[in-house]
Structure formats: structure tokens, C-alpha cells
Image 1: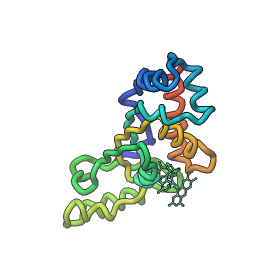
Image 2 (image 1 turned 60 degrees about the horizontal axis):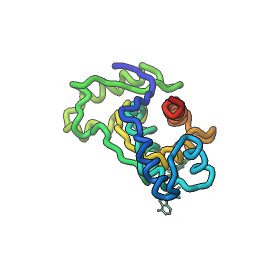
Image 3 (image 1 turned 30 degrees about the horizontal axis):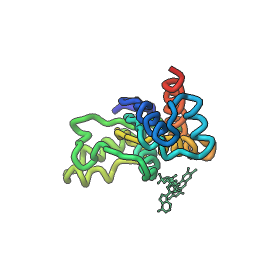
Image 4 (image 1 turned 90 degrees about the vertical axis):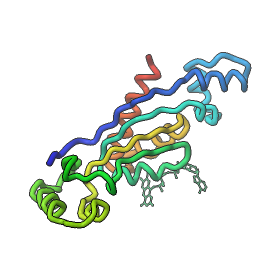
Length: 175
Ligand SMILES: Cc1cc2nc3c(=O)[nH]c(=O)nc-3n(C[C@H](O)[C@H](O)[C@H](O)COP(=O)(O)OP(=O)(O)OC[C@H]3O[C@@H](n4cnc5c(N)ncnc54)[C@H](O)[C@@H]3O)c2cc1C
């Protein structure tokens, strides 16, 4: 049994030249970083839908449920608890204050003792069970995701992931 931290790894950076191409059609001009910021300020954000970013998130099942509430411009492929048998793959839980190891060891014991199908055994697992979810978001959706989930109103785990991803994305834009 492992207790792990949530993480986000970008696997494909957006092709910003696609946005520039779209901007060129609108204004007959070259796209540049200043223009990108102007687009956001002016609300002309539909051109940002032409580029997208892909990333792999490792987080709790509770957090993944919050993530997939973002519907527009977002695609998801999540590890299946119906088919992935933790008995073979190993148990991973996201570290969460107040959830102690003894409790999680009890969960593992219950899972291993259950004789039903894998899709039924998953009902024993808690919300802090780790999951992997592959996400693609267009840039307009990404900025909206940052808006909602970097906020102090968002829950700690998804907020940490959103702030981490925002930092990576801003460093990419600066390069
Ligand atoms: C702090 C916080 C607390 C939350 N608490 C809860 C909670 O207690 N319970 C709960 O169920 N959810 C909760 N949510 C989830 C929230 O309600 C949204 O489902 C989630 O943040 C995704 O946002 P979104 O719908 O704007 O994103 P998307 O689904 O990506 O939609 C993007 C935008 O498209 C437009 N849009 C999408 N679908 C429609 C539609 N059907 N009709 C009209 N316009 C549409 C809207 O402008 C929307 O903002 C919470 C979210 C946050 C950030």
C-alpha cells in the first residue's frame, strides 16, 4: 500500500501557432504574446479553442469527480475501477490529513477478503483512492478551469493541482 501526493504532468503542450492562424484570419495580422493577452482582456477568447493541452493527473477519486464537472472543451480518459484490480496493481491512496494508515490498511484487508467481481469490490474503496486521469482541454476551457479552481474557494487538492498546472502553463508561455 502506498500513500502518494497528487500530481499533474503535461504530456502535450498547445500549438499556439494554431491560435495565431485563427487571429490572422480575424484581423489580417500576426499573432504575438501581447495579442494573446489582448484577446483575453477583450473577451475574444473563442480563438483560444483552436489549441489544446493534454496532461496526466494523479489525484483522489473525490478530486477526479470535481475535475470532470468541467464539461465544455474538455475530454477525459480515466483508469477504470471496473477492470483494474488493485489486488494485482497495488493499492495507492492520496495523502489526506486526518485519514490514518490503519484505516486504509483495513480497507485493503476488506478488498482482498471480498470474493465478488472487481467491479463490485471497488465499492469498498474510499474517496481518497488514487486514480489516474488523462485530460485534454482547449485553452479557453483551461483558463476557465484556472479561474474556478485556483480560487481560494476551491477545495485544497484540486486547487493545488490547478495552481501547479497554471504555473507550468505560464512558464511555457514565457519560453
Ligand atoms: C468552489 C466550488 C464549489 C462547488 N460546489 C459544488 C457543489 O456543491 N455541487 C455541485 O454539484 N457542483 C459544485 N461545483 C461544480 C460547479 O457547479 C461546476 O459544475 C464546475 O465548476 C464546472 O464549471 P462550469 O459548469 O462553469 O464548467 P463547464 O462545464 O466547462 O462549462 C463552461 C461554461 O459553459 C456554460 N455552460 C455549460 N453547460 C451549460 C448549460 N447546460 N447551460 C448553460 N450554460 C452552460 C457556462 O457558462 C459554463 O460556465 C463547485 C465548483 C466550485 C469551483
